[in-house]
Amino acid sequence: MTKRLNHLAQKNETQQKRNNQQETNMSLDNTSHPGRPGPEELVPSRYALRVGEIDVLVISDGVLPLPAKTLATNAAPADLMNWLNHMFLPPEMFDWPLNVLVARSGNQTILVDAGLGAQYPGFPRAGQFPQRLEAAGIDLASVTDVVITHLHMDHVGGLLVDGMKERLRSDVRIHVAAAEVAFWALPDFTHTDMPTPVPAVLRSTATRFLNEYHSQLRTFEEEYEVAPGVVVCRTGGHSPGHSVVRLASGGDRLTFAGDAVFPCGFDHPDWYNGFDHDPDEAARVRVRLLRELAATGEPLVAAHLSFPFGRVAVDGDAFRWVAGFWDY
Image 1 (tube, helix red, strand yellow):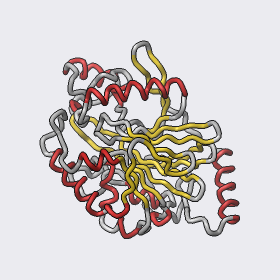
Image 2 (tube, helix red, strand yellow):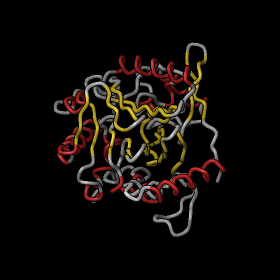
Image 3 (cartoon, one colour):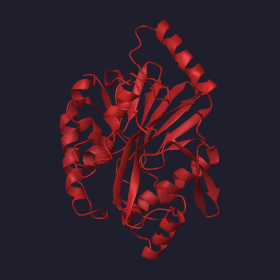
């Protein structure tokens, strides 16, 4: 445990004592302790950092194995194979990381995306979100706001697990772009290149989520400040209402990019992902975002990038992912 996290833990404890009415209860301890809920794991599942006065926890929902070709549907097969070899990755199946974020700003605790959920038996290594939240000491009843970057099943499925809705506050606010909600009324998969069974599952999962949580939905058009220093911004591209979340406080910044960036998108930002509903726009969004992040040097977290975070550097006509140094 670092001095910084010890100091952070002490500060949080003092704040809790000063403010008994505070509703959040998020532990930023990044180590395992006997007696905590959930089994001990050999792999890390959460990582704490600070953005000014905003506490941040990156949580792994596990991994999602998908055909490697979905990473770059417009790339020559040989080029994709070369990239996979260069990255020491297998040629057929690629384990997509699944990351969610929890941020605490003031008296609000914000969950950003919710992982896959456990209702998909074909993905036994995914859907770890509920127990890992519990193991991290985060009570779902303390979550005041949920931001959904888009309504694909690996971003909302965790909130459809049996018993999850009952554990949330009845007045929890779920923020999602209005364009995203409208899209799933009649979704268009014309420009996607997904495994055959996936579109039907995406459609049914989005429909179920919107039906179950319709009274908690808070839609926005282009951007909305969810809490002090926590702003959700619609980008489009990956889906019409796809959004990113910007955190800013005290001169520090962090971006949660949802599905705007995939692992191959640094070396080849023009490669289309099979799950992009508008591949051309998704590529434009990706380039704009990566240029901005390279200029600011801020940490980047994304749903399907390596856990827990990294930064972006310019590399000629492309970009480079720079893995963050863990503070532990």
